[in-house]
Image 1: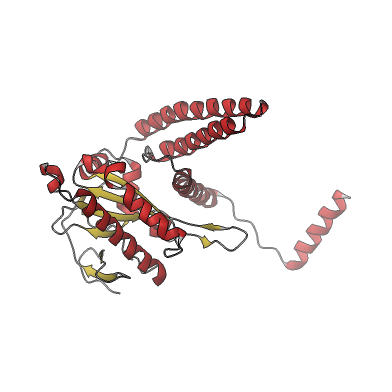
Image 2: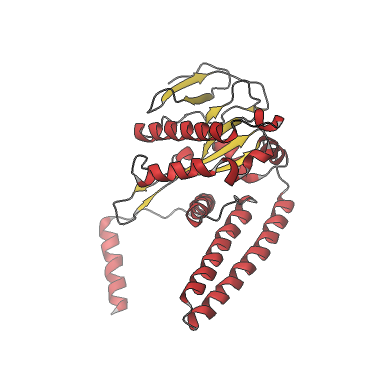
Length: 311
């Protein structure tokens, strides 16, 4: 689909007006130094099944949020709104894995950032537990095949972190795909650059704190195992793994969601580590000397010499 707007960006919103969800794509421009959806492909790179699943997920999040905030008397609750729902991670960048029936046995999750207009609306038990429970039931029933993870942050928090150069939210702003946007909502501010020395100092501080904490729980778990305290060992080692995933996220993004779901933390951490590996591989390959081409005969001779030396 072509785009004739000046900056050649795509604004995408989901309007789930049917059970399967009705998708509409709107094209247009926006003011300089503002980000509407910093992607130029929308979600056309996803299979139609996944597009329909996302439409249904967005509809459920909006429905459950409306139910949770209905009847509020306080001004902030009466005016409760979802400002944006943004797809990020492997499904946004096109690097998802969907191989549950192979030896790999892995299926990438949908990772979503839900932005609300007041910090109190991020309370999980009050406003988001029912949405999470409903989505989990649909996944168990296989109505939705792709697992769904979502985090909720206030608009003020996100915009402040973008202004500070927070790299977790900056990556989402640059790579994410907006699935829903409140009509008349403001554009996200452009992410600012973070001082490298400050970033390194922050990462080191997170590593020192969380790696040490993880090792303490690991040692407690090993002690419990030596005494055959299986339940205690399982709990302590679970805590160790959770802290290791948190360590990876905080070191690489300076952010960890307010979640104890190890599967969710693992999904986020693996995405970050994969991104780091791709970056390192790119830098290594760009500096590595070129290997001269070899004929098939030369390769066979070289392998024969290797086999002789090994005997």
